[in-house]
Length: 511
Length: 92
Ligand code: SF4
Ligand code: SF4
Ligand code: SF4
Image (tube, rainbow over all chains, first blue to last red; front, side):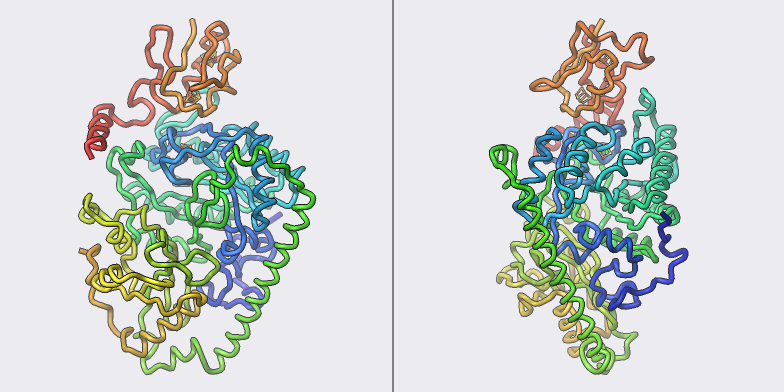
């Protein structure tokens, strides 16, 4: 099967009801301009569809911890440190245990549609354990989609085996297409029964990745490419990577920030390699996006996460808790199908409502009224807003409880989702990273560049500190739909004349 | 003539399927090599398979107790640098 290569042959036909502009926030889903058969494959996959991640859940199991390469951002004493939270070792399961766990979770969380095998390690470096798990699940739980993440080294020889299972997509981490850059990321690979170091190893890895990507695309499997942005190493190069994988037919490119702290014991961590700032990451994501979908809601979840994106219910389903459980999967499948149908109905209703609002809007209100504000469009600049939410597409979280924020951009034409920012992961540079730095200050630093924070509630102290940092706290839109609230706040800002000029930057983080 | 897996092993499973002599087995607290079975891959491969994929420096040693992957050889982190960083982290 031939996949349409995005941006090459695309006329970007908008899906029914969608908006023709790809970045338009009125798109229910960024994936709207993908061909129908691709959308069908990803619409209920929380990691691939921005819309789906509010409604469907995923889980990961760790069954295959071996790896056949070494990345400088990884310390094998922990999990694969860029695909999952470093420093937390996942519960390693045998394939039989994994199958049991997946079926138990699927019965208890019917929204669970996808099982992924990612880190620790490379699932395809331990193909027996990975495929044993897949084989059993394809047979016993045919309503669960399977997903695998790989570094690609062993991919070409295993593509055919992989295609036998219930797999629609594969995630491949591709950090470079240039072996000289690769040599700075991968110290060695294990290839044909020996360890191959440096540039030579990187060259083999890159060849295998590109070959594997081609083979998957040829077989109609969707490939998402993850890249880790490493400042000074591959940051300038990733645009080229994006073009190369796009040309081969990858359907999503996800640029993730390097996470490197000394205590992770990785090469980059120990050698003081810094991660990118939010601004740098966002800029690169924008540069790579072009006409290809960029994934912006990735949470870099840990290898045995369970539940909705951004939440982890793994603790409820540890092996000791589920060993005794007996799952009636036939009954569970019936219930699951009902729940999925209900979600689909909600989504369809939502989409319909949106079209209607848009039609109305084009007549008089909402977005159009923005342009009829006294200010001419080009002068009303875009504004970034941070949202505290625990899911469901509404503003429903207390500022102080938010461990991550969704970042939206509003401009005169639309509202769009940009990214999410975790408050505990990033460090914006040495000067703000003193030991005495409070959690609150960290959070405020993480919100750099945003002008408004929308949350359900906010305390007195953070209110003052946010204001001091030039960020307007706003708790007036609690329980409202995110996009509507962002549009309303933007409109208000316009009415107050706040959109004409850049705000003076008072934020400490910019100092 | 046999290799030995020692303390540093993180039980990653990488070596086990590669051993041509089926000498490696999962054990607690870490994987072990059956000294009676290990041939050091002699006659099968030029490189000792377990040591060639093991990602952990000093986890596999020879009969003299000498690490097949000495410090710094796999991560590229100079051992002195690692010591220094470790001391800094502990001092926090
Ligand atoms: S592929 Fe993943 S597990 Fe393997 S070394 Fe790289 S980050 Fe670590
Ligand atoms: S040296 Fe070879 S034979 Fe001995 S344990 Fe390692 S892989 Fe097996
Ligand atoms: S490859 Fe090394 S760390 Fe992994 S199980 Fe074998 S000896 Fe242990």
